[in-house]
Image 1 (spheres, one colour):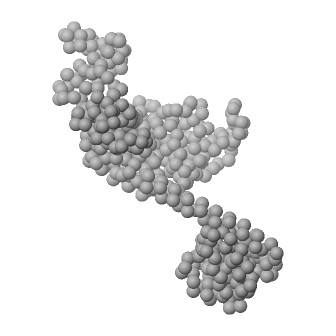
Image 2 (tube, one colour):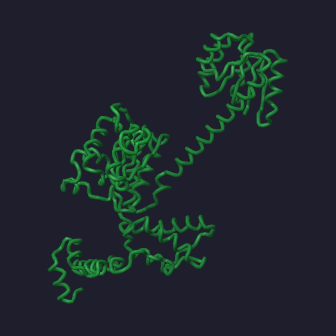
Image 3 (cartoon, rainbow, N blue to C red):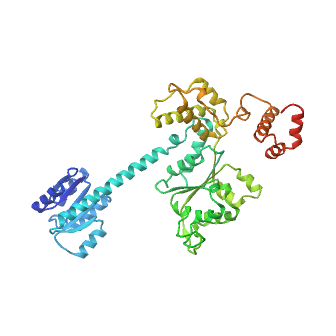
Length: 444
């Protein structure tokens, strides 16, 4: 730190300078007047100790001028007078602390400077971390893709990040819905506040209300302590409600009220808690269909719809598959201390022919395993291990007629369910006679 000691008593000032200079990380300068201090402020001091009794200026006036121009600069006032009222007025004016000149001043000043140094380090670390997080969650760094479908998604993400509108993210499992929610949060004005995620399908229905809205001690059996809910944890930040389609019907009305009134009432409490929480929801279900089926409230559906973002499945992002494969392979190499590996032509062809039912999550797992299995010179098609064998894997290879697609799909499910025609008919919502007729005609 660069420390300015402003003191008109040269002997006393030199004593303080000598004492603080024991820390070789500090640069300590002695200044003997308020006029000189103001003329040297362009040098950017980290801390000022200010003699309250300077002959050329009023101490309170000088402090107010410093705090107006440099509000975050710590100023420690040192005075020969022990006046409580003066000390209080200076602290109100923005002084970091007020010290009286006595035999303990040097030691107290030493501890104050160390504390300010630690606080400065923590602020710099926090700033650095925020910059790192901001860089990490830049749209093009977090979400890879050059396909037209993804360019449209990037446009939606920018609009979502620049507003406070509720966002609904839909797409198949593994398409990256939570990554999208994080990207929106960390590029929005709420980025300094919490991002809290909760998966509705992973919580027992009897605990969902407590998880979302919190509870008081003794609110129910097992509630040994008071606990904040996710809405309150995410206050001023973003709450990501994943698989919102699985929210129990009994809580849908309560969630609607919370979104409308911007307030919650914890279980077992009569106290209303105001919240300022942005909500992003995601689901792999067709919520409109869930509304038609009577499983989801229509008014809540429209409240949550907000800005819709439909993530495309990986099979509809042809030109992104190889880009993502290389990205995941390079990351896996880095994590395992391996030099970057080339992808063979055969591997690229095999990747492009595969439908990726597990989407990006499956591609990532496949490429990480391929890096481990390869011979270290490059990754070939033999290093790829897909988890979805059988006719469905090859479903989209080549151009088939609708009849041929139907035959492949039915054959796949018959194999999967041990030729249980009744079960397959129920799963595919077709008549059993359709399957029996295809079997009789030799099509299966």
